Amino acid sequence: MAVDVIMPQMGESIFEGTITKWLKKPGDKIERDEPLFEISTDKVDAEIPAPAAGVLKEIKVNEGQTVPIQTVVAVIDAAGAAVAAPPPQAEAPRPAPAPAPPKAQVSKPAVVAAAPAVPPAVVAPPPAPPLHAAPNGEKVRSSPLVRRLAREHNIDIARLSGTGAGGRVSKHDILAAIGGAPAARPAAPAPVAAPPRPSAAPPPPAGPGSPDAALRDKMYFGQYDVQPMSIMRQRIAEHMVLSKHVSPHVYSLEEADVTGIVRLRASMKEKFEQETGTKLTYMPFFLRAAVEALRAFPTVNASVDGTNIVLHKECNIGVAVALDWGLIVPVVKNAEEKNFLGLGRTMNDLAERARTKKLKPEEVTESTFSITNPGSYGGLFGLAVINQPNVAILGLGSIEKRPVVINDAIAVRSMVYLSLSYDHRVVDGAVAHQFMSHVKRTLENWTEPIL
Image 1 (cartoon, rainbow, N blue to C red):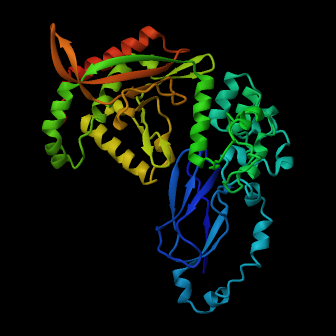
Image 2 (cartoon, one colour):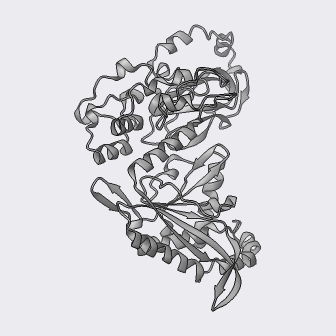
Image 3 (tube, helix red, strand yellow):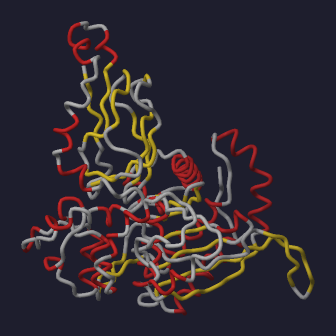
């Protein structure tokens, strides 16, 4: 019995996915729920398990291709088929060429046939003619982010030609309308897909923020390799450019004496792990300090919707996790309701599943504030880009022993630099520094029991 493997829907607002890697090849035996392939969406990268045990009969969508949800991407010969002699034997000869043409008639795979390394928002251009029919009124298909950007910039989505799956108005479409990006930009996938090798005629780049032709000419000289961005790297680039375009960034710095916390962690680390099964890291201390400051200064726990400020009641804190292949920001939901142990367990669990591609789309959405930790890699401090739609992000530097003056005497203390990047449309400098002072006081005067 043949079992179709479909592109799953990884969230309500996700309508397509890109296959980044096949973990099995045709002819391989697979078990039910064994990882079969990896996908990348607007929200997360994830491993998709096999829906049935058997043998992978056919791969219909290659790595790098983006297809709408519910598209058949592969076919499995179910394990039970070998036992039920007649039906499986009929399929054993692999009449693959016959079924292939009917599948090719479906428009979904054709939408992305030439888009190996371009984000979903840019993937649809090859069949541009059918998608350029203007949507009608309220039936325009778009994501909440696209609708918010349209409101902020007074753009009528109904007048845009959607290049997303099924004619959806994508993030690329709205960015092009806002910044006057050239309409021909989506045509770049074909050149980018060429093998990465030195060339006298450099391939035109794709995606937001691409340099113009004059600047590109200055990039390609001597010997070089061209490496197309991964899907995740393209999305990171989109989000960073969008954030800088939308939010006027301002920065505030603070220095905190965390000697007490360092000593507490050193003395309790082994006991904490033995009793809770969770490693004791510094992150729960900073999460707690951020929550207390957000409660005291709610305008930092906000978003902007046009001329309205949305003040969030929950403290959903996104924490940036560095991966070998990029960066992702899982969210600790309702952090204000969790005790120290709850914060530690939640953060450790999210970080581990982020590294193993087990996160769910809802676990990387609805953040109200963010934290990034360049200090874990030795950074003195960093000036981070705001994670939209937040209005601020806290950066943590490395904890180092430094000489400081205490009561007119020099002492060696464990110190850390803290940075706050904030959206000046909402947060003023006075509020930002008061927020940082609150974080500093919480860290320097830690009283909450950790067990």
